[in-house]
Image (cartoon, rainbow, N blue to C red):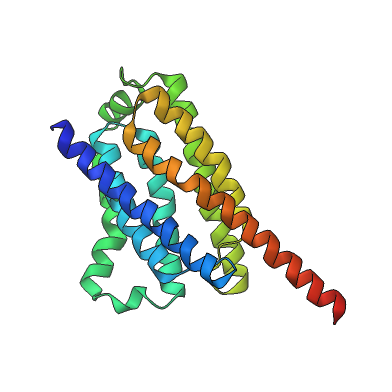
Length: 216
């Protein structure tokens, strides 16, 4: 498959991921507090599908691994916000089973799968482990977000989500620079300012809440 098409899919996925962060950031700045807007989760799901195919075409297991974990967390947030069931039933079923079908196809020939992803001449094992570590940390932010939101019965983006985002993003950018992957470099670099700013907004909101509690 030609590089322009592969990178086109990758850049489109990153456009959705970057778009979700920029929109969330702008809406949060306007509200003076961290928000979890509907469009953040809609763009997340679309970007996840696209980036999964990009990782497949790039023979990059670490990218695929990260998307498989977060995919259903996006759906959970959409469902919590009441958006998931607004989709046609056939669309919900297709979206829900898509990762399962993809994994089954990858594992249909286990030996070929291992050879393709774990013995890939393009990605040495140490680099694969390093990249996967970044994806795991980056993915844990959504696991944390899900746990935090689940306990509060609402879709929330807490300060811990943004802290984990910064750490994971730093590792992924380093991995992308080593692999000369412009898609990952651009996509992750855009988020640095937004992650940092959301941390500041969260700290200000927590400080104001503490101040109100002390005076009441």
